[in-house]
Image 1 (cartoon, rainbow, N blue to C red):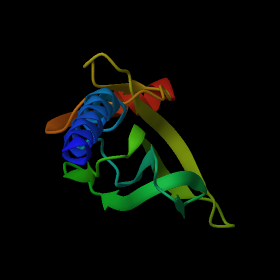
Image 2: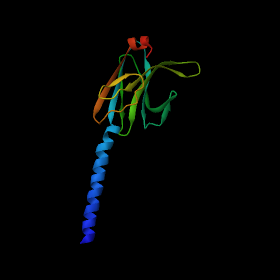
Image 3: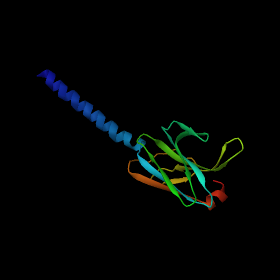
Image 4: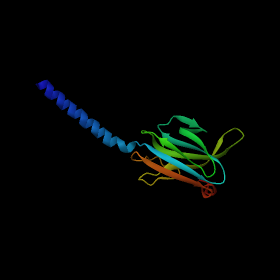
Length: 144
């Protein structure tokens, strides 16, 4: 009898610890989509980044995926659970050595405010969200 009470008690403790970890860990990780719309008069190359991605695309560390985005197109990347501090680096061209020029970097601002120019190193607080970045001629002129 004592053994079965101990097993139930231990199982209950494990369940409580697992539930606590699941609830407290959820804000640190997300599963979400980030879309980029190219509203410029030129084709660009975008690299989606996040902590948890191990790629190196066009010299950008923590790269998840790179895509060409033509004028007027929208492309997106789906970030898996566990990918945090998402961002997008946008390039227009490469030099004679093949090194890409970053002309804009966007990061998640936190607090549900979406993406903004700069690197913010914050993470969305849950799954199922879609965030959008519209890249415009004004962004190029501003030298983001």
